[in-house]
Image 1 (cartoon, rainbow, N blue to C red):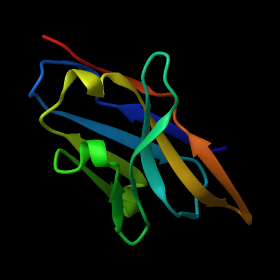
Image 2 (image 1 turned 180 degrees about the vertical axis):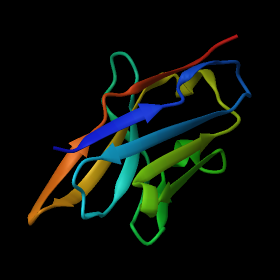
Image 3 (image 1 turned 60 degrees about the vertical axis):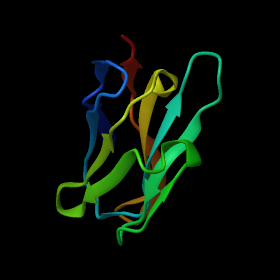
Length: 120
């Protein structure tokens, strides 16, 4: 069984910063791509940023220049550094691990989500 556990969410003022973490646990042999998604009330879940096992990253236009995704493969941990936060960044942020190799099986997994609220 694989679990993704996020942490680091909270309440922050506009212009502030937060760092999200997501740690994958279980009998994991390898994780391919990982990413952060978010879902605001009444909206669809959307991709924020993704990163390959080799470290190549991809960002949604609305976070470019403000957010940085990174990962520590040895710790099976994903990070999202969020700077210059805006009220429209308020959402539940979800960690996603794609093609996780457990034994000889490949599956995708989601974390439970962490709330980020940007408000004065």
